[in-house]
Length: 279
Image (cartoon, rainbow, N blue to C red; front, side, top):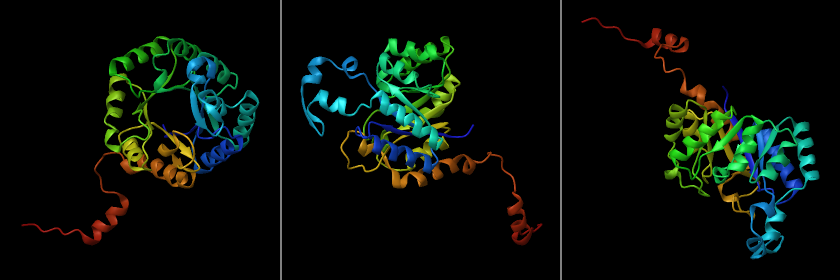
């Protein structure tokens, strides 16, 4: 099974369809398998008190202004859907509420995603599991017992899933990666396990994750880490994305089979340099 790479656009588009298309195009050009967004029904996810509270942003002076400024309309997602089909790249969106999941379902996306923050949202989980569609499940902020419960629910619902090892800090300190969880989770649940990263460094954590058996990678991408937004600093800039994808895709081949043998190329060197002395 080849490494599946998800370019997490999330909300790094800052409400701009043009910026979103630039990110999608960069993901396709770099060789990513999919682009992913986040979808919220703002009035369902947040309370009125929170939305009316002050927050200065490019869209206004309240939390509502900021949250609404980051959401695309149905017409804009229709444009995104057309654009991805034209380029030949898959897309999806992680929903933060039931209505948002129904919204995403209308586009017949090829996979679903459960964000770490949604592991306790039982109505949303039921909605996702009912689709019986391939689902990536981030495990950030979760205890092993909570992951046990999630896996049991997906198994019982006969919904295909893949776990994503994750540390939900933005950006994540490299020493908090705890990548040995990848083979541990694979052994515990007998399923594929990927890695969802939020580190500010470019390559070394993800290379190690793939070397430890990660079957998928999800990384945030951005045009510029200095742009407005809480996820930008934990993202890969698009100018570096192609090298990132090429490097992580080489890791499985570099790991080899683990069988110690003399390769054909090495045999020619052996014939030239090997010294045999019988005592």
